[in-house]
Image (cartoon, rainbow, N blue to C red; front, side, top):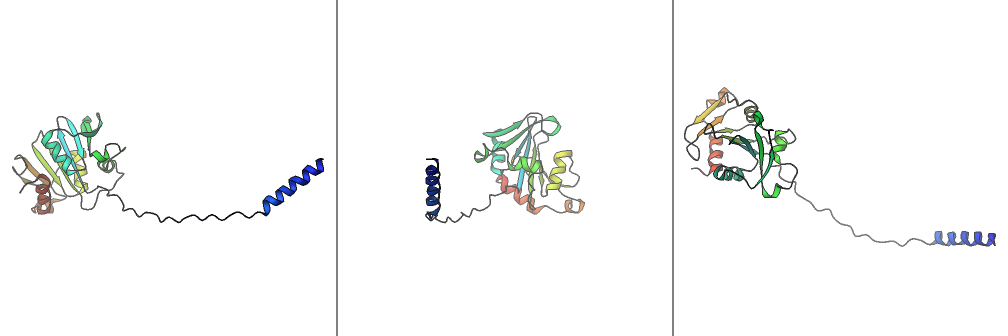
Length: 191
C-alpha cells in the first residue's frame, strides 16, 4: 500500500511537470509622458505686518494679502520667523494639503532659486517695499535687514510707499533698475 501511494505521487508529479504552462499575453502599456512640474522658484514675497513675517511664493496671493490683510490658506510657525516673529506661509488652494511649499523649501535650502530670481519685501512699519533681483541680496536682507546698495523710488508703491531696489553691489546701485521696476509695476498693476 505504501509503495502504491508513493508510485501514485511520483506519477502525479510527473504529469504535473509535463504540462506546459499556457502563455498569457500581457498588453504592453506605454508609460505616460508627464511634463515636469513647475518648481515655482522664480520669485518670493515677504510682508512684515502686525509683528508677523508673512511669506508667499505666489505674486497674486501676496498682492491680495496686502489688500485684505490675510490669506485663506496658511501654514503658521509661532516664534520661528526673524527675531522670534510668527512665521506664516501663505498657500494657494492647490498647495494647502501639501507638507511643504516652494518658499519654505527655498528658505531651508532644499530648493535652489532660479537664476532670474525676483523678490519683494514689504515692511508696514517703514511703509516701504524692498525689491531684489538676486537671491543672495534677498537672503542677506532677510537675515540681517541690511540693504547696503540701493536705488530708492519715493512714493512709487501702490499706496505711495517708497520702493527701494536693492542692488548686488555699488556699481549696480548707480544704474536705474529698469527690469526690476517693470516687474514691480506689473506685480502691483501700476503704470
